[in-house]
Image (tube, rainbow, N blue to C red; front, side, top):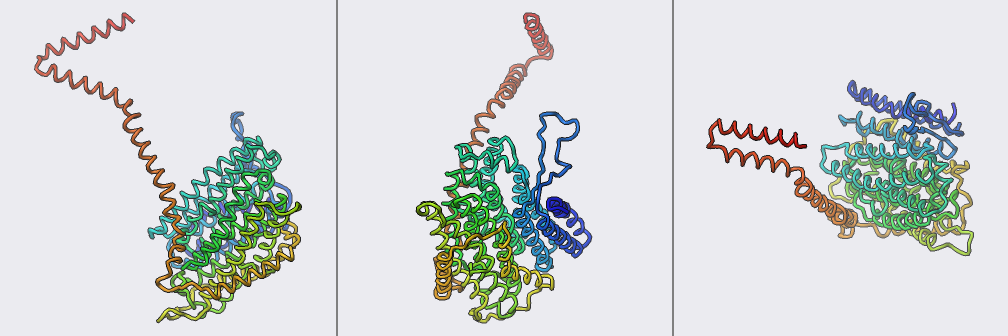
Length: 610
């Protein structure tokens, strides 16, 4: 079986499996869960097959042409899929993370009466991301992009009985939809410029013109929204109201990484678009350092990971904005996407396990909880080591590749854009090590809350433990994948590697020395950080209130001015009728009949005269 065929079958398994899981849930939750895990296993196996047979392209025959007898103006729908080595590697990574999430969700949501709906949504969500990864066509990319947005709304709001979960789902949907408007404009503009929706044609026609630059800038804005980059960052923090397996899926290998993948596929077009590259560089440089600093001050461990994702996606996107060549940017961005998927899935699933034990993800409740499970503490530590970018872990290798690409230039020295991003990357390295150290100490240090007692062992089955072990091994040994050409880390810069080691050590010392207070009454700075520095209030003031005010003005104009033209004839007829009734109320019936006859004569005269 060739790679494209394997991917097509994986798409069918995931998308077609969603209604099957829902149907099985009507019979038994256990049956639905088993089916969800089986389908994810089959899809992951097909992903591995795709890696081994990665070559060529495939067009789904059912969607290749218009229906027989269709009008000539009916556009064809090109369902073209591709599995190069790079595409197949990312597709397999997505499918393996989905398998881990489905297995873990079976245990984590054991008592949830809506578990079948959750796992069915995960399957559809994964299918949408897979479609986006393997698509050779911008139309298919847009389909996957939009389906993911809808599924994320369902996953974040899964616990819809909670008002906070409902609000978080609404917020995520609205903020990302706002950015999606720009994304759609960019897609349509690129298709119009190229005269085709094929990725190859779009890249070939990207000549650095003003039209291409505008289109790519719109596309970048859409990506910033889906990736929770400044100024769209706040929705991802509230999304923590969803179940932890949903957070693992959204953060690790699907929604927030989707934009990185789209820009990776269009790296050559982005490289020729100066304004778009500057927008991306400024947004990612600001986001990665800002989010890393904010993560250090969080009072909830799950929110530490959420801010970490925002920061790391900034790291992931940055080489696409400043790389000397498009190929260098592609390799660095895809490499960090791969590594981030592994260690972030491990971290989120582990914190979900620890939260079952502590009953909360608040730092003060998780304090010292690792003492009850050495295994959980160990895998938590391994994930954080990779997040901190310790050399030769999977996260360390991809991070060094990003820094090397950002800093390298074949000119006299780095330009302003490269220098800005490189400086932000180095600051982020130190801050990441600091908050990773703090996150480990929260779990591993002795309990500091008076009267706190260790809870019962977390309810995790053998398969869930095996999932964490597999992710932990991949976190340590996943760097071997970089030995293959699609994710080749290139030539690591030894001086920069030395600088990174010093910065990591500095960050660890900061994390050990400046541990923020995790008591019930946190410091004011931490309180402001936990509220996202007022970003939510800024959204309301800058976006929501003006939009609502404009909506009220439009409603008034529509109701009082535009509709008045519609109401006027009816009002005139009604007034005339009432006037006639009042005028002839005292008349006799014969007089009324006379008026009717006179009216008919007038109408007949008008008709004859015309």
